[in-house]
Image (cartoon, rainbow, N blue to C red; front, side, top):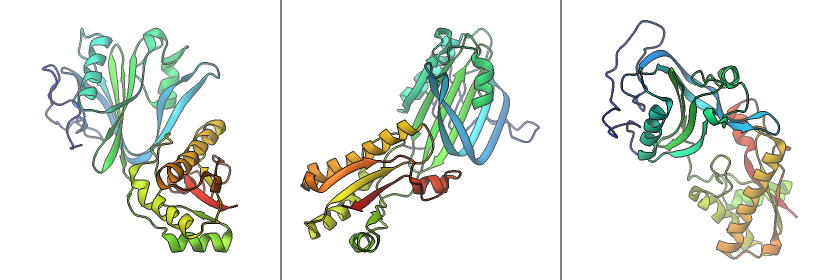
Length: 306
């Protein structure tokens, strides 16, 4: 998708504000991807070129815990003062409509007036945990959206309250895909030398188990291995990083391993009795989970000779 304003040209009340520089450490201008509701003014703005950002994904009523996703990238947090005499519903519907018109993926939304965001005193908790200041204990609406651009993925967390609106933009560079670092010779060498091999070039979206199209070159190399060694039997083992709950990550890694096996069997004719899928979640890391570089190494698919 072209790099356009998210809220450009949908209705007359959504306007593009001319950038202006105010005093302070950060220029108080709109984010280039976001045009605010007409009449809004920037109360505060904070920009960090690269950091972790905890994103609010909902509330688990049974365990009284937040659902959280941790993202890394350039983080822009803007708090707008709402124009007078505009309701939360009017503001929210216009922002959400603008997002939908741009074709973003809506990941989560809630209405605190119905206690959908959290079933208790929400204000202080959302401020402390996620930097969301607009939503109060009994009012406010929230939406999390995802925009796939050519060179980056952008997450937008937007919270609308009676007096203010939070806009959090997290810009993440896309990893380079379509290159297979592991060819048939490397697969064979790894299995012969140590009995297992990590398959680079297998990709999934965050929290998803469907193989991405960019995984095809890596899958093709595994097919070559299995065709060259007709007696070879493998465990296909999925691994995740340490983010999230253990049970969730075990299920996620199992689903990803099953997706690889399903593709090899259904699309490439490999006999199903040669492959067994397993998921071990975060239980066998190869790097520290404290940094994204390490977490990326821990998210992997491994072939183990049976």
